[in-house]
Image 1 (cartoon, protein in one colour):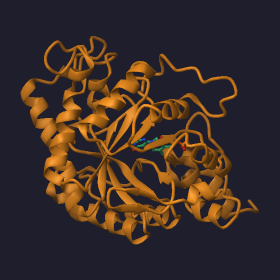
Image 2 (tube, protein in one colour):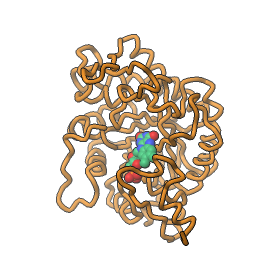
Image 3 (cartoon, helix red, strand yellow):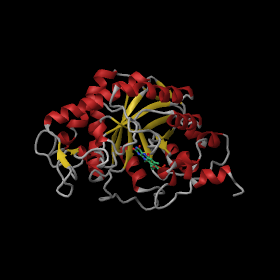
Length: 355
Ligand SMILES: Cc1cc2nc3c(=O)[nH]c(=O)nc-3n(C[C@H](O)[C@H](O)[C@H](O)COP(=O)(O)O)c2cc1C
């Protein structure tokens, strides 16, 4: 297990171990104003006290009409800074690196959030979809940059741009969604122009030590594209890549015979061989042994475990102390914590073993 507990230097930060708490949106915690409340704060206090080296705060909206739900946290105005600073301080007080995931849902924004949905290209199957004009692209790139500036003011060590799971940045990057024929579509450089502007803008406004992470949809639309996107992002100035999926479950790479993890982890390990910057891999890693193997064999620089740390917020401390963590029960068809955090059966069973 020692590999999991080796430290890692990223810019001026000494990260205490290789375990990441990935972004996990807390549905129904905050209200329509997107302002952090005590429930959000208690959640991050509990998670950060569990020992992860990096804690990435959940998808936080840079644009009110681009939310994925009406109760999503926001960073679209200065009113959000104070609450965010409480999360950043809590995470840092536990010795973890704090990143804020900044997000726009693009075409996935529901009607409860906005009548029209803004995206790279209109989708004939979605009458609410409207292609962004060049002026709107300028406005939205500023919204991401300002979101990062607010994160910095709140005390976060950096941001993670949400470029995966089929959301706006993923929609621009992938030719599956992006059918523009102007400077923002048509080839990889154009598809990534929006992201590149945001990355360069954040670097200019937030300084060289501010960490810019990017959550990448590996199959966007194929793993070969994912590799090119990763290289391009590295060139553009991204410091840390977090490899997940691209929302659309097509063109899934085949894992080689004997590979013990799923195609999302596999994609991260492949992308790691094409870039110099550190790579986080994620998805169904599940156990300490599997997590340690990925680091030991240099297949990843960091491992993110989401549901395992929801089921057992003390997951990292338990592993370090050679104790068995509470095991996530992998609820199907969907994580019960996702629906309502009080419904997680693994946590409830551990709290009331006799029931
Ligand atoms: C309740 C819940 C909320 C999530 N919210 C986000 C989010 O805000 N941003 C994001 O990029 N991924 C989100 N995800 C995906 C996780 O970050 C992670 O990639 C996924 O759970 C797979 O990792 P795991 O198998 O270790 O849980 C969420 C997942 C869950 C279960």
